[in-house]
Image (tube, rainbow, N blue to C red; front, top):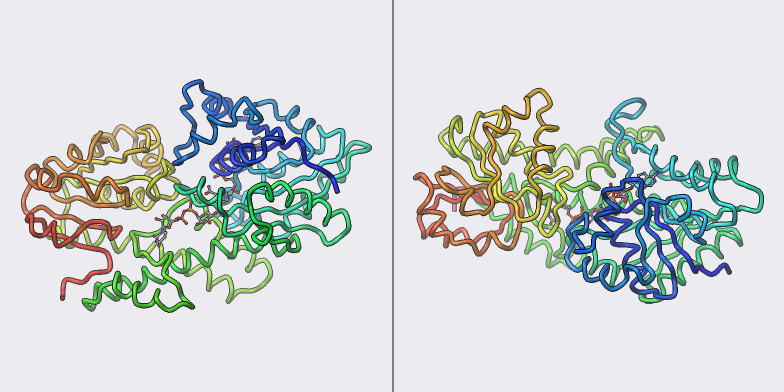
Length: 469
Ligand code: NAD
Ligand code: UDX
């Protein structure tokens, strides 16, 4: 069995960075180099004051312990490839924006470029690991590229090892994963490569949590896991609409059904809609895969999960307008939270972006506060969401604030878009005193104590709670 002494990870993003930093921490005998073409990103990973390019609780501590010991960040992709026994491909696989499959299929251009680079550079045999989320049978395309372009003496074993971490809890997830999944060809070489990667994880993951399966099952399991998780949220959000219309309470419904051990209590929190870089992209990818396999009904089934999510966001912004006497033109709306979930600075597909775009279109004035998201990221996202509106015009309507209290000043309504813990403990009396009356709160995250806010004087609307009691 090949032994892994040197690892290279291509892609220093939300997955490659934390994953391989944890491998380095847990395997001091393995030299881990994370490479990326993006110089600014690598500089941030190497910054002397640890101003890392992503915010993730616990990550800085891991990097502080391992960086310079057996963890390195570099833009020298070729050296990283040449030196490694095992290479993780952890590049982005966004939804295609143009061409065949646009809007659904995964854009595999970055995976292909990384694979071609490995073939062109490697002078010895390597284990190549798909860490990126990819469509089923991508490993086959990688093999064709590697075989057609490799140098003599360089042979490649391809593994699939999808990542299941969630942002905001990435370090905890990596320290104690529910499972590590490794897919390989069921040949002698494939099994040996699988055993070599498994040995790396066994430095801290119990063996029974390391699942070894066929390559295609592994690739599909990643899409399937995200589709099933997102489907739970769309299901609970669909029920939240029924709750609002009937007077049932979605928190009580979720608790009641979650007590059934077959259903379980997790991932049943109604919300303004799921966001993040994975769920929508991976479901659309599954829809595309199903369509290309002529499985029309299967494609339609999964597509509905995304449709429901769009409906949930639209429904929420409409409820705000309806409640504010059918118009928010010229009214100031405070949006608390811009990240797609708490404990991350990531805004990809954040529901807040859609809500704010809707408020802009209603000609409201919008104040935004988020404890982690940088201003330039907010402007970039809002600009992309309204391509026909010049940024200067957006900036006359939208304001970025440095505290929740400042954002709520002179507002008619407060929208809780992200479940940051600090929004629970803000001085709601002071918020109320600074707002125009009647002062409205719309809790899109089931975060605050609605009864307490009502006792202060707020008019509170909660997702999945009807007005009828
Ligand atoms: P990301 O955009 O944060 O990082 C990808 C990095 O790869 C970028 O820094 C980019 O510059 C770099 N890159 C692209 N092509 C390159 C090349 N040819 N050579 C060197 N560097 C290159 O993306 P991410 O969020 O880390 O996601 C990576 C993959 O992991 C995706 O397939 C995603 O679906 C999957 N995934 C993401 C998460 C998540 O929570 N973000 C969780 C599980 C799986
Ligand atoms: C997800 C998967 O959980 C993870 O396993 C995979 O590797 C990557 O995609 P992530 O997108 O980082 O992780 O976060 P997650 O916690 O899954 O939340 C995704 C979205 O769903 C967020 O917008 C979150 O607020 C929302 N959500 C989550 C709900 O609305 N309700 C819930 O009950 C749970």
